[in-house]
Image (cartoon, rainbow, N blue to C red; front, side, top):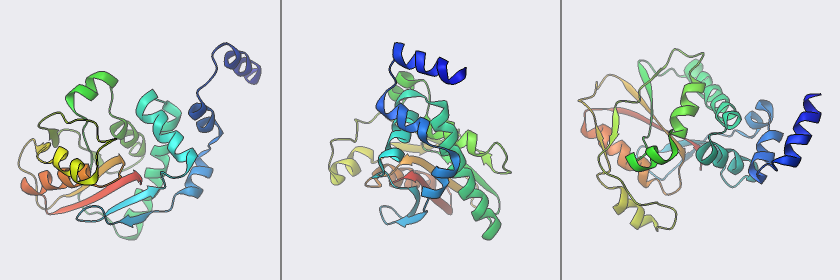
Length: 208
C-alpha cells in the first residue's frame, strides 16, 4: 500500500534526480562507501569521510544542503557517528566537543538551517560528545565560493570567523564542515579557534 502511495505521489510530484538517488541509499551502502582519508588542504590536515566525486554522495550532500532532506541528514549523520565511535574506541578524544562551521547570517536566514549542524545533531544522538554551536561565529558575510579560485577563496574567507569567547586549551575541538574543496573555509575557522586559545583542533569533512 505504501509503495502504491509513493508511485502515485511520484506521478503527481516527480521527485528530483538527486532525491531519487538518496532514496536508493541505505545506511549500509553509505557506510560501505565511507573511506576516511587525510586531505592536505589545511593545517592541521582534515579528515574526509566520503568522496564528493561519487554521484550518489554528491546527491546526498545536495539534498541535505539545499532541500533539508531528513533522509540525507540521517544517512550522513550515521556515517559521521560510525566514524566518531570508531575513533573514540581506538584513540579517544579526551574532553571534546563537535563544532559545526556556521553559515553566514544571510545564508542561514535564506535556508533556515545549517546542514552541518543538522547532520551533527543526528550523529550525536547516542554519543557522549557534546555539540557546540555557540563557539564559532561568522564575523561577516562572504560571497559564494563556487566560482572562485583557491587564492580568491582564501582572500574571501580571511577573517570571516571569530570565537564567541576565550576557549579552553585542554578541550579538543572537532571542527565539522559538510564539503571541503580548497580548505579555505576550514582554515579560516581553524585560525579563529586557535586565536581564541584552542590548542587541539581536529578538522572533519563529510566529503571532499
